[in-house]
Length: 140
Image: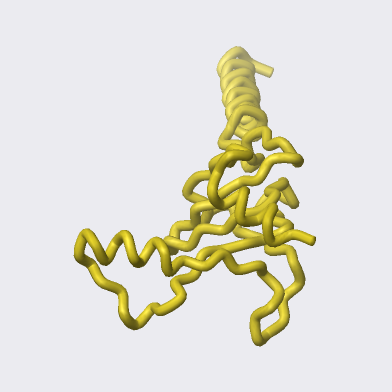
């Protein structure tokens, strides 16, 4: 091999190794698809990009989905007569019902698989939370 060919081979190998190192670091240090550490004994509020909020116990399922069990959600008792005034906001909050997933017409199981890219944020709920107290009161 002459000197020019040897230099080209070395540059090609160096570029290839650099490319492999960049891809490897992206794979190792890139965006994680894991959820933050969650306590299985705590209740979580899961806020989705469509505005819906679900309550339950959240866990990683796989790269794309999280699994929520013991699922509850909020629903207005009377959606058609919502009042936007200040006093209406107070009465609307009183018209909220905590619904246990499973009693709907289509009969879902008590677990949901949520696309992780649709989850905006997750909150751990305190035991003193009104939602947690309502859930505990509704359980047998």
